[in-house]
Image 1 (cartoon, rainbow, N blue to C red):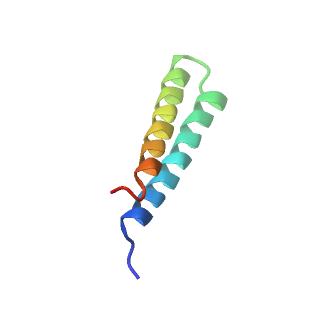
Image 2 (cartoon, rainbow, N blue to C red):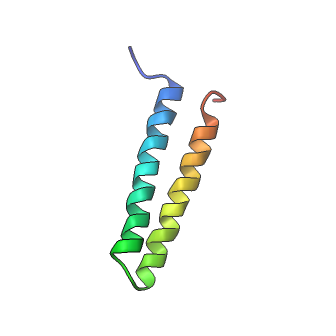
Length: 60
């Protein structure tokens, strides 16, 4: 059984949420200077992109 479009979008959403959590946790726990703001912003961007992918499931 192959993966259809909804399964691919679900996996992409899951991976992007994991990467967003990783980047935000790096921003919180590892970097205390200006780089932390960049990591946090990119992590929030990953969350926004995962939200869009989740909204596209069933519509593509």
